[in-house]
Length: 447
Ligand SMILES: Nc1ncnc2c1ncn2[C@@H]1O[C@H](COP(=O)(O)OP(=O)(O)OP(=O)(O)O)[C@@H](O)[C@H]1O
Image (tube, rainbow, N blue to C red; front, side, top):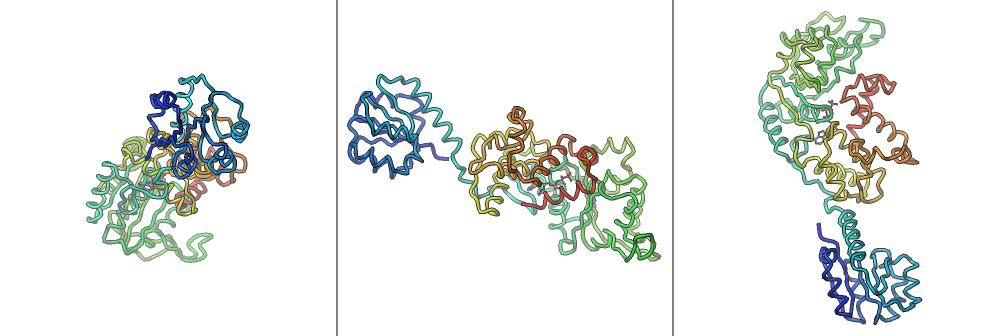
């Protein structure tokens, strides 16, 4: 990122050398002019954001020209004078041109003020990458860290086999994308990839959802229904949140995995399943097995190849890279040019992201709603960043924010508070688990 630029126009050598000895001045990329007549022209063609002008000796005409110039909007001026009244200069000051220092000059104040400008300009500087993503990609996964590259290699190896796979990782870390990528790289890629959330299945309909039903087999079965095993025929069936499947149904699933056979509800004919199963959970498996919410025999049948998805905090620079990635896509979609300030990127990189990539993605989407141009740290609505703790309610929910954006914030924040537990989240929010899944699916598929 190029350094902010400072234009200096002085004729007094002692003022020039005093200014050039300031640390804050030397931080800038400097452009020095000592030609009385054409300094304004030079400034106009420079890319400087800050200008120091010694007033004495400056032509009145150039101050007049400056009055109506767009330079007043884009440059912060510091005028240095001997203190003689100057109406043209006063007018410039009334227009908000910047600072007017009168002799004798207090250089430590000038130093502090220029340092502040430098920091602000460095921070506000639009990232050159606002419309591009520089992360590597594998299938549906994005990330350049060593941890992600090791995951890519594992996926490639497992994809080439016929084994079932079990994906373990925190909520929002990308388990469904891993499953989908496994499918894309497998020989089944031409056949369907079907994903279901076991936690969202109602216990009464679970058999029908998995194995299908025939017309008239129960009240409400008005027509034949294909279960997910049939829908995924020849392809891949992704059973997300497998540990949330009711215990008694897990044994039925185990039987299908062992024999490859299943029968639709109310049907007579046995069907043979030709699907690869990929299961996933964000729960601690040994706890789930110990608490008898998940069958150990089912685990061994599914986990022919366990795959761990690293949490975002273990992916080096991927957090800030993904932030740029999501922003670039958002910019392309909305035809905008928003960017992330350096301090925002630093905050993103130093935060631990307990809700992982999903949390980061939603945080960037919300920041895009809140920021007009440069996304600053205060646009990141993340409680743990500290800043937000001090924010009052009106700052958290800006006036005019769309209701569905507010709903999205409520859902993602509550999910985070509950460490990804969807049952507790739905209960707290007063909605059904199924509604929660539907809403999360909608958010995940946007952008
Ligand atoms: N590496 C990644 N690159 C790009 N997007 C990602 C990545 N990982 C996750 N995402 C995005 O984050 C969101 C959550 O991903 P996903 O649903 O795969 O997570 P999950 O681990 O399956 O979540 P859950 O445990 O809640 O089921 C999605 O919008 C997904 O597109």
